[in-house]
Image (cartoon, rainbow, N blue to C red; front, side):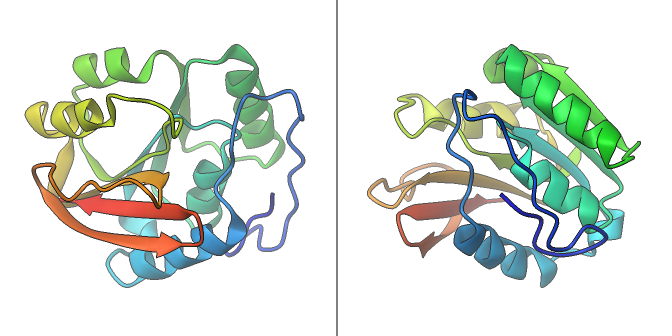
Length: 176
């Protein structure tokens, strides 16, 4: 995987093959960040990266100057890899949490401008992510929740739904 833009533009990060993840493709990530760049000044945003996996999205936000990024993943090896990579890149505006995402959302009291969730495509209760984010009021007034999912799934029926963008087999649904 590589960082597309910002301070570490074109930096390749090699994650261990043993991590149980499916990193967002560069093609999809480029599309997503083009959309977000038209809506947010990255230097002013606080980001929550759920199911952070390799930290792919975390590094992209940090490289682009995000004010703060909190990364959450339950898998110990993912947590260790993100922690090491963030330290290697000298980012100090991060919080890395090893916890079940649903338990984290249920207990979280912070507010975020952008919440990005990339759950396993096979996860059946994706709608609970949307429910917890909005019931716990985790977004700022103009904040966005972005849920990555298979292009075969529809999130149109969920409350707070705004739109979906598709990039190959990847889809991003936006909620506000």
